[in-house]
Length: 113
Image (spheres, rainbow, N blue to C red):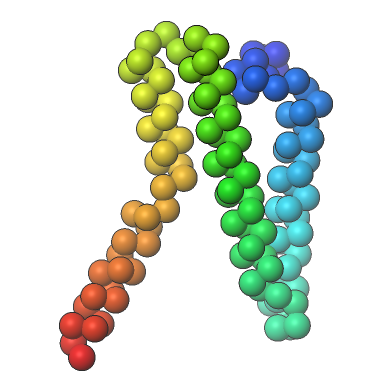
């Protein structure tokens, strides 16, 4: 199972482990910044948010590499399978729908002024 997983990522075990270790370290740092900020504002909540963003950015980059690897190495049985995978990744990383409601709140707020 691990061999197939690594193959679909286009990575060796060492590279896969290093990527995940890097993300784990950033996640732990972010968690500690968040936890520390709960006790004192001297601990940066902004730094926690920056680390969250870095994790998401690295995740997006890795996902695009995965998709490119799969398409360039014929790992999709069909175009529809490739598009299905693409849509799954796109839905995971598309944050605009989450924020759209706030844009509507901005419009509503300023329309009352």
